[in-house]
View 1 (tube, rainbow, N blue to C red):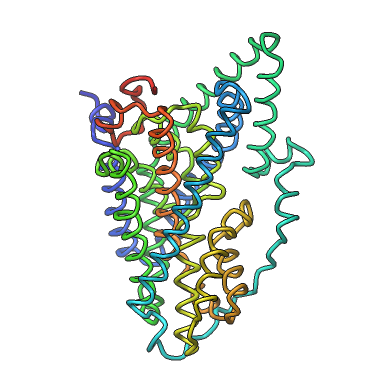
View 2: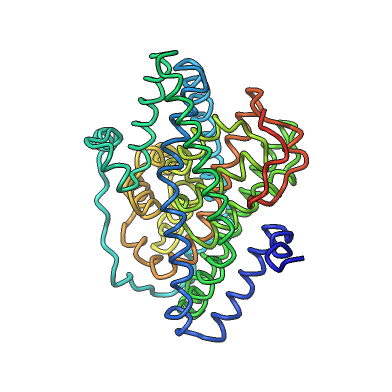
Amino acid sequence: MKPWARWFRIPFWQRVLGAFVLGALAGWALGDRAGTWLQPLGTLYVQLIRMIATPLVFFAVIHAVSALRGQKSVAALGGRTFLWFAVTAALAVGVGLGTAALTKPGVGVGQLQVASDYKPRQVPGPVQVLLDVVPTNPFAALAEGKMLQVIFFAGLVGFALVKLGDRTARLRELVGEASDAMIQVTRFVLELTPLGTFGLIAALVGTYGFERLLPLGTFVLTLYLACAVHVVFVYGGLLAAHGLNPLRFFRGAAPGMQVAFVSSSSFASMPVALRSVTHNLGVNRDYAAFAVPLGATIKMDGCGAIYPAMTSLFVAQYFGLTLSAPQLFIILLASVLGSFGTAGVPGTAVVMTTVVLSAAGLPLEGLGYLLAIDRVLDMMRTLTNVTGQMLVPVLVAREEGLLDLDVYNRASSNVGLEEPPSPAA
């Protein structure tokens, strides 16, 4: 058996996990040199993922909208998807507040210093955010990877193909072929995930160190605990309520979760998440092509719900403030609505937390205390984001009859070069 054939026979998640462990050991052994020598491997992988993300979404959304038979079907699926986005975000805020109330990460941490590079973010108004969804130049949006603008323009093109009917049958077929080609390119790139994981983790461990975590160790542990509780119990409970085995979901979603953790980027994880949802979990490909990219832009349970809620309690505890019931409600409302309103704004976690702290009347300087450890926090936040971005399409597909239960129940954890076990429903 050829060496590479033997390599591909190893389950994908095991290859990534092995690369994670080896990367951590290499970072520990090399120290700061790991950032110089091994970071380029991680950077190359992230660039390759970003390279395929925009054309993959563009062709997939056009094909999906035309295949979902017009505005009524897309509107119904979109409404149900948004509803689950909001419900799970509200539950995430509750988990964040409850965990921080129990562990009290802001009590007894001593005198903290605001990070030297901290500057309060300018948060765009809701009208400007809505206007920014519409591209003035769709080709510029494609070139710059502005995902909401790409989805908006691709959706319009898809509706136009539906409206024109048989006159664009050949063009619809061509778009479907382009979408298939990008899926094949995605499978090629995903085979480099272990290499990228090795480089990213080695550089993180080698250059970050543990001394920066000590003053805020309780906050780090609290965030990781809150995210784990939300993913395992909230997401698992919702799956069980839909008659789905949670262990099967986590097995199928594992590749997307792994890439999210090491890359700390929902956008970079989106092609892997889309592949996991369709290939491993049996969600209808046309619906997933619409829901997963949308979720990667606005579905942020970790960055937009748990983290702002926890930071609000951390700041209140650090400054000795008591949050009133109206303030807690404002935190809940601002976190749920703000995650939609700041869609596409770079630095989602910082922007969202700025929105929530401002709405609740809490000192913005408290956010500056956490920036020194933001990279470590962002790993778990992003894992939670991406898991939620995969969960909601599974729930909606289950409700709408778009889930292939045979594929789901034998959920693979491999998103590599092999063909899917069977077509999606």
